[in-house]
Image 1 (spheres, one colour):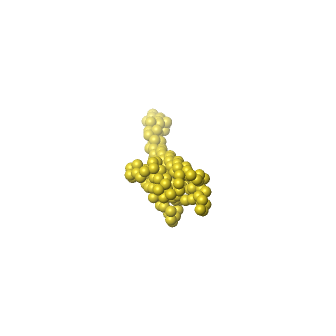
Image 2 (cartoon, one colour; image 1 turned 90 degrees about the horizontal axis):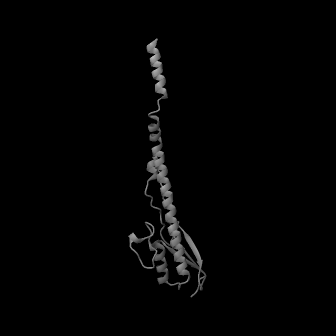
Image 3 (cartoon, helix red, strand yellow; image 1 turned 45 degrees about the vertical axis):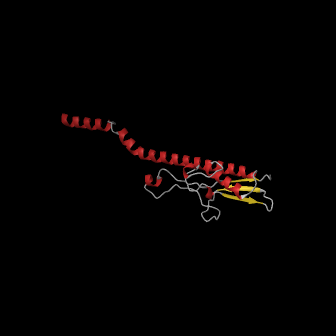
Length: 166
């Protein structure tokens, strides 16, 4: 009778022992936490890139709204939207990876007198004005989830300002 009692006590003790439970819970949660960290950082980077481009298109529209509406001034505004300065810049100096001055569209309303100036980055690839700017993620979240999910939205801010004739 005593060996059966010892076996029952050992079995009950084994059932109450939690020494490996924490490690098992950690093994289950680490992949989920890694995906959440990657997703949060990618969304944060996307909004930072979008805000940067929205501010640069706003600065370009503000610059162009009180300058003569000439081709030279339009080129300076495109450089301002892409690089943050009026002169042309190298690929390493752009505000957002993948941005070029050629991707900035400048439009105006009113003829013959210009009334408004619009500076934008196209959203539609079929747009004849310029090429789209796609967000370039660091993490491949789809690979972390074992799916074909891809987070690469388009960055396409648009700013319209009233033209102040000089």
